[in-house]
Image 1 (spheres, rainbow, N blue to C red):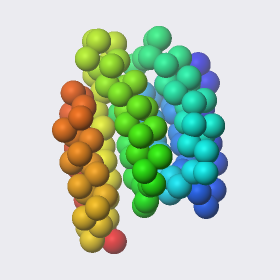
Image 2 (tube, rainbow, N blue to C red):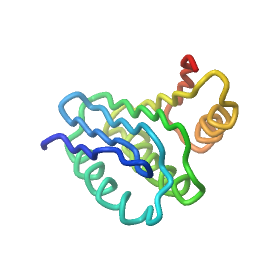
Image 3 (cartoon, rainbow, N blue to C red):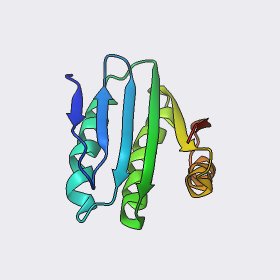
Image 4 (spheres, one colour):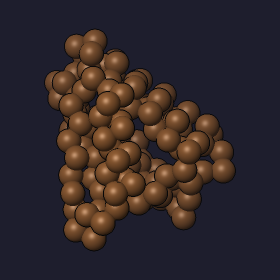
Length: 127
């Protein structure tokens, strides 16, 4: 499987799925006008990756902001990986990065931690 990458825009995050390293990264802003159109191809890519994943998979999320429709799709994406984790396909971990002064993003990471079975590591970065 080849890496899957989406270039960021003002409203969509950068996405990198690197199957060889077992890494999925999202960074930037996620304020889609049509979140379904953006996330569906990513769901398909992650499901394809999980047919033959690495032993460990790391999901790195470093978003500056995301809107409520993105939150739903982001949770759906994380649940796809989480299902691979709980099903024993891969040992997955979510690394949720947030700026030290951004309590909303920290709380979002804590919320996702409560909704997922895979380990969630909150990573504070400098402002």
